[in-house]
Image (cartoon, rainbow, N blue to C red; front, side, top):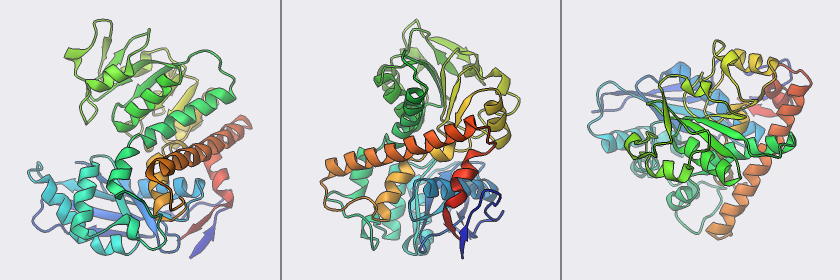
Length: 379
């Protein structure tokens, strides 16, 4: 079914379909949720956590539908989840089993990539077991290097997009001095965003990982910080300069004076109760569902510029979707294709951030719904 959204409409409450997967020999539950399709295609990441469930996946798949529509990619939104019932002892075996079981979906047009808890190596094991090669999908962009190699060369792309959103908004606001930045969440997205923002001349004054918040009003050395951070985003406190202060766990990052707050970790990082504590005038939702709708509305009413996740956190999806659907041009050498994709993704993010800000300044309660008003969504 083809459905055209209008400003007072919404997508149906339920996804297009949900599939429960049985993983033989694995103590884990798994689901694939497809929210929408375009020409039979859908895409999204696979999440591996101890708490993921169908409801969470449905929300994430809906967000994928919106992200992909907002950057004009002809593909629908999906999400997969794996929830272990016991400590993982054979991660590779789990991913290969997931690949074999999800093979019909992958080859049928539902791409399942990386998300929270899933590394590129996990995805590669899944694809190998499924006999799936993205670049061999009919209509996909043809690469001169293997997809896995190209993807790794663009591993910072989501953080790049998050930084682009912040930078373009600051430019539109005519900010001329270096801005103080707090990054909540120091995984792949947070690290890349921090690095790009610092290289653009701004000061990262605090970062928060799963242990707590680290701060330095004079500015943290992001490259040095990244060098002592594990793959899961945990900073080794024993290797930090003395001037770096540890502010403790929880939402201590809200106590740091900042101009820009990048949320790059869990959902509901800023909820309605914590809205009064937000000091930064620009809030960038670099993670999925970083602010709930009510918190987002309250932040805007309090005068903050809020850049929503479906506009900001699109880099990885845009990269994969542009190649999968053939929007990215074939025939370019890998460096040229990488440059084309970065420019294309940056252009989409800048345009949507400008539109969101414009609608917010006009007092519109839900700018994203208005941006989606003339987007075609296939069900």
